[in-house]
Length: 164
Image 1 (cartoon, rainbow, N blue to C red):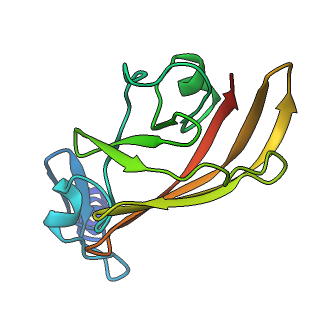
Image 2: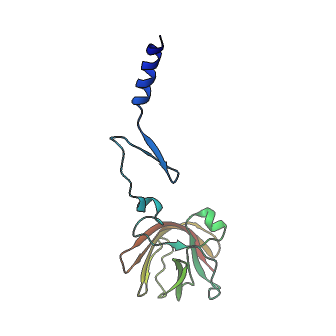
Image 3: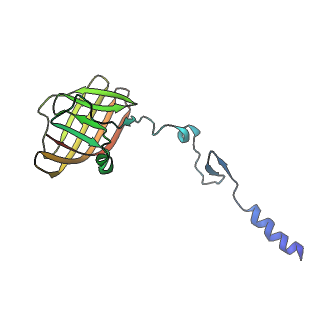
């Protein structure tokens, strides 16, 4: 009788797939498992991605300006990833360093907001559309692409406003 009970138990445990936990990551030994490089798990993000930081209004910017966040929630909390002063200088924070990019006035179409600005190190392309217009303020949403001269690139959604 004991052998009849023991045989199904042995079969049950011998058919289970082996698994182990490393740094809170469950790795299963299975023929369909995908091998993961530990550098990908512990890295700081997607390879070749630029790390955009959030920041408050620079002291140099007052009056008319455009300012964007990644989404409405960040915008409401004043967590900006892009600010410009409507024609002279744009600001982004890359790898915890504030980057200033000179601008040319006049490249602003309020219906289909699109502009490309660059300095020696970085190119920023913004494409958006007007979603709301108030007295002297227009709300926009779209995408911002940031690319450096090494070929690293980040594309993020943006939400924000331009106005005086």
